[in-house]
Image (cartoon, rainbow, N blue to C red):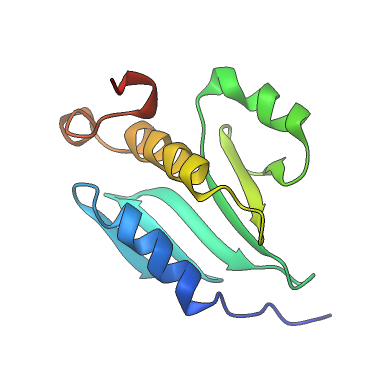
Length: 125
């Protein structure tokens, strides 16, 4: 079985600069790759797969789960958790869109007192 590749430092730095800006969101090593958590709840998890591709998983609103499933690649619905989705990272990743998805994920996972401090993309402007 092929080994999982380490996540490139540039990807971790880019994600960390966004997720680390959320109140009490902490970066830590995960079973594979790196995850960001608020309290005991995982906001995002980036890792290399045995297929040598890099993926990030995050939480989505229950009403959006079917849309992610229908979008198909690079999006996918994880086989664990009720609202875990993700995407395969690549040269064509829309990092602005990913930032919005991760903001939503943070707000879903954080206690309301912290989530209320963050402007969600659908509430901006």
